Image (tube, rainbow, N blue to C red):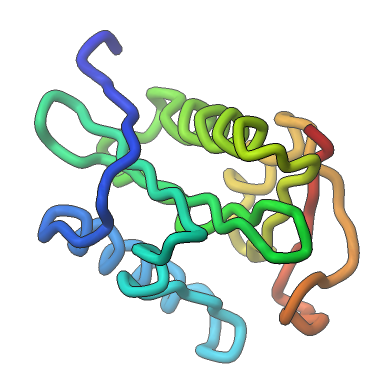
Length: 152
């Protein structure tokens, strides 16, 4: 895994756009449009978002973002690892990197929304210390969503 790097990067890259398209396709196959809460590239490039890319060599193989909410918490967004790079603990490494960034930003909580049809994601978040909570921010309760948070 020494050839894996994690770095803050611009989401405005063609290779990153392909990652986000793959994530959108994956989630769109699992959930109806009203249960998907995508941030587009413009939103991911906003000043209140920190976007990270995992690379194996030069190739982008995963991504994740921290959105800093005005209410004083961070929200995990757009976590994804391409299928051929799964099993390398990249999801955990991205999550830890995003949590480190949240701490540097002075945030006490990281929150997230994920879906009930993503058992690997749920397992990752639970083993990392996230617990279920009610809907937050602009989210509304959704039987296909799981809302979680972790105190840093």
